[in-house]
Structures are given as C-alpha cells and as structure tokens.
Image (tube, rainbow over all chains, first blue to last red; front, side, top):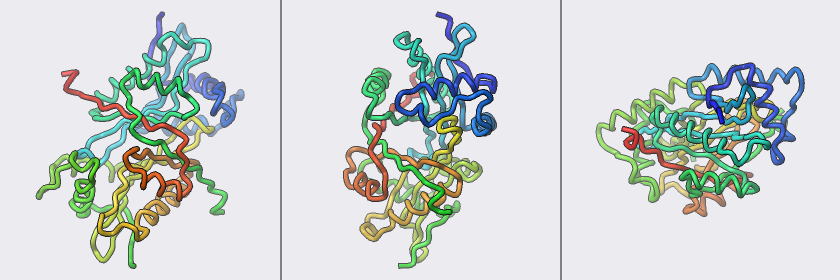
Length: 157
Length: 157
C-alpha cells in the first residue's frame, strides 16, 4: 500500500473537511460544501503561516484518507521543554484497520522528536474506547483527565 | 486582596520557576537555581515572541503567587474555529483557598473569548482530584481522556 504522509496543501482542504464532517461524534459541527466556507480557508492559511502548527495528511493513490494536526508548544515547565499536541485525528472509514492511523501518529511522533519535544499529548473523547486502545498501543498513557469548556462569545456581547 | 493578573515579564521568571518547582507531583522536573538554567530564559523568549502563546502571572503586593500558560490554536475543525489550551496552572501553597486560581482561570477564559476561541481545554493529572473539582466548578467537563507519551530523543541518537 503506497501511503504518503505529508504536510497538507491548500487543495487538500476539501478532502480534509470531508473527513472531519464524516465523523459520527463531531461531524455535525462541520459543513462540507462546494465551495467550502471561507472560515476553513482562513484557518488553513493561519496554520500554514504558523511555524508551530502543521496540518498533516495521509495520501493513497492521490486520495486524502487521513489527517491530523500537530502543534508545537514552548513551555516553561520541564526546564523550558517543548511539547507537541495532536488534535483532530481522522481516518477515512473505508480505510480503517490498515495501519493508516498508526502511520500518521508515528510520523507525528518523529516530527515532534525532530522539533525537540520531550512530550506528545492529546485528548480523546471517552465515547471512543477504540481510539483510546489505539493510542495506548502507541505508548500513550491515560494519566490525565481531558477537560473542556465551550466558550460563548455571544454571552459577552 | 489586591491581586493583579497580567502577562509575565522576564524578571518574573525566577518566581514562576519557584512555583513550578514547589509542586508535589511535577516539581522534581524543575531546577530552581540562581541564576536559572538558560533553557528557562530561552523558553520565556520563545513564548514572549509567539502571538499564540501567553505566560500569565498573578501578583499580590509585588510577589508572584500564581501562573498559567495560554496557547491559542488555529484549527480546521469546528468550521475553522480556534481553541485555547491552558497548561501549567500553579498557585503558591501559602495562598490557596483564596480564589487566586479562579481569578487566573477567569482571566484566561476572557482572554480566550477575546481571541475568538470557541473552546478552552486542559488536561489535569488524575492524581489531582481537587484540581478536577475546581475546573468542574468553572464549567469544564471531563469528556475526554488526557493521554501523554514521553518522547526520548536520545533513542534516535
């Protein structure tokens, strides 16, 4: 299987949004339309221009079948050590069980090492027990609670 | 109580490292020395020069009694929405139970709203049940597992 893991280009964006929108748990947040909402392109540009953010894709025979985002974070803790954060890991439902997620995550871990990160971390929804086992198989430990709070800018208006 | 929440300046750094080093769970990772290790100053500079990272302190009568770090992250998900990540929340043991942590977190949430973040998130060590209740009192929900993997660049050498 000829899978390439690489940094996303702007013409990959529709395929990335399609992967996000297909997710059973968070897909309803997205809008996969033609053309895409301008906010998707704005976010892509902001990521592309930030040296501490990388949007990654897995490509098979010209088709985008997986994605994740990597963020490199400078910190004071751990004697000024850097961390890598992984967000938005998605693999095409038709391509699961073939090691695509593992290839994406191993690429991300290697990239994080190159960027001198001492730690890589993520949060995974408790409704995704399979994902949790997948990350455990890659050496991740459930040492923390992942806590989130939605902010409503409208409240402040 | 005359507490000020503000962005850290470089001469706050020794006090920040002192707070980190005093922590029972993660303090052993730090080295509070005079002068500080250069790596702490390098990390401070990197944070100060990155528009998507802010190191925050709580000051009482000229003393630094609390800190946290905020990272603003552009994302494709949520129609190109931004997230805020909170890391390294520490309050001086002698000042606990006085609402300092709440002031820091409310400042962080307001800042995240100003930066158009639709979500604020953090991970908290499962060994800190009090911290978990504290974040719940601020509206955070334990919807996710926080998973971490230490990277060892030495392995690749």
